Length: 88
Image (cartoon, rainbow, N blue to C red; front, side, top):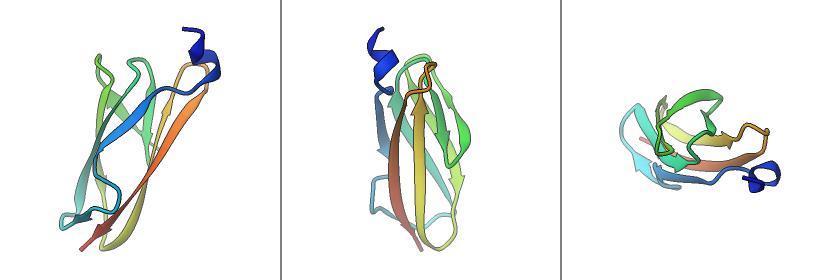
């Protein structure tokens, strides 16, 4: 519990992978974090389940898209990951 005061929550992004090429206009961002963390995907809150899993649909346009995922604990500490995808 004390580590929550000093460190951000664990964050792992399962999909999409960095550098992935997609052919759709909607991408589902999925991953895992700590159970009570808040997750923002490009600034929009994502639902976090009891097991820490989260998912959020993101609308994208052709070209390169940078998706920022931030997990924040109740003490304001955060973990951040940036995924870049190429959209056809």
